[in-house]
Amino acid sequence: MSARQSVKVVIGGEEFTVRSELSPEYTQEVANYFDQVLGSVRGSLPSVEAHKTAILAGLAVTDELFQGRRGDAEVASQLEQLTNELTRMIPPGKRGPGTGPSSDE
Image (cartoon, rainbow, N blue to C red; front, side, top):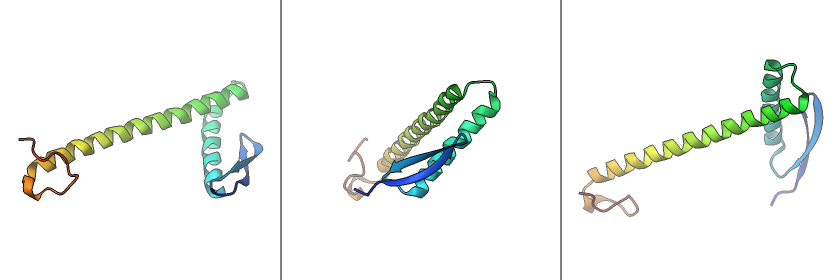
């Protein structure tokens, strides 16, 4: 396990010290991304209280995560279907181990 490192980040104009086992560059990148989302939400809803803006930004980032996961699952399913179709086209004796069903015909 890596040692925790302290990284100073600025989110919403406030400086925070984040301790993480991840690289400082990655921690800064994550903080910068969230700050951009927070800024976007603040820009579109300037009269909303700061804590509510932070919650809305968190929801926006969580939505992106869920959409990405859903997209990944769809791509994985499509790849599995394609693999199965291609495997059926290969004669059973020429299929390698772990390449799918030995015969679907």
